Amino acid sequence: MSGDRPYHLEDQIGFVLRKASQRHIAIFARHIGELTPPQFAALAKLAEVGATSQNQLGALIAMDAATIKGVIDRLKARGLVDLTKHDEDKRRLVVSLTATGQEAVERLLPLARHITEQTSAPLNEREMATLMRLLAKIS
Amino acid sequence: MSGDRPYHLEDQIGFVLRKASQRHIAIFARHIGELTPPQFAALAKLAEVGATSQNQLGALIAMDAATIKGVIDRLKARGLVDLTKHDEDKRRLVVSLTATGQEAVERLLPLARHITEQTSAPLNEREMATLMRLLAKIS
DNA sequence: CGAAATTCGTTCGTATGCAAATGATATCCG
DNA sequence: CGGATATCATTTGCATACGAACGAATTTCG
Image 1: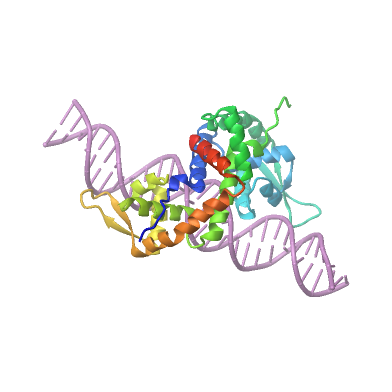
Image 2: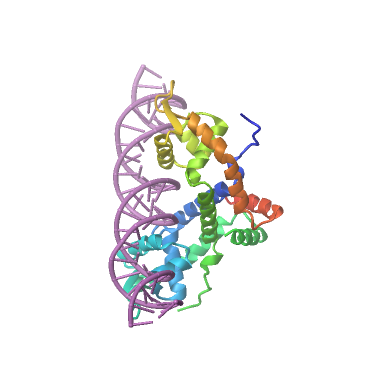
């Protein structure tokens, strides 16, 4: 019946992580309506490292094969990336930015920085650094 | 073309939040295979506050109307919750735990505590308290 | 070499998650 | 009272997310 310690959902790390993510995603959507966070992540990483295979790109932005496929398909449908077959390894699909995709990344990067700023606005610099360090530790 | 400051995805709060959530969800799945985190959240909150309307429950666990509906539908299909029409307000759908649902919450609560512990294992107590406080602040 | 194991991409099924539109009911307020 | 608003639940559409199973290609290793 009840020698129960109380269990408050609000004190569980999983719940708080979910709420923080929700707020961040909402801020992202307000500032960048044309792309989702995963789509932007794919473009930004592609701009950083250059053309790579689909699964490789997924690994770089922490998406499994099934998820990255959907993201890339939608980016391709919008003309932001190109897909070509790998010369040597016939299994691989090489993803690269189109001119439009490159332009989009350059245009959206300042907004992305602003989104990070807005999300961390409730914290001072020291707190933000601490938060990033602790989150990295539990990832 | 490039008076560009570098932009590292890994240093963006949104990306790190997503990665931390991924790890937590994976730990959850390893320990509680029969329910998802949102499903368990609904059951646990229901056990805490007693029967409530569907939307009310959603508000308590930060889910919009469309999302909570799906979660409750699946819990109902598995016999963990009951749905009854509200006496006074004919718009409302009252969600309550079944005996099976109550039993499930009691059985899974210790596992849920363990999941929180496992997720925060890389941190000491002080760090964990700080992390929770900072996450709450940006939520 | 050649069989076994691995990698790459795809597909299917299931489960969030949210915006927007809708119908039914309640509440507010002039 | 009664129309304007608001709330509750539902539905549709789209976009992650991941497990599992699959075929094709590549690598490993006996």
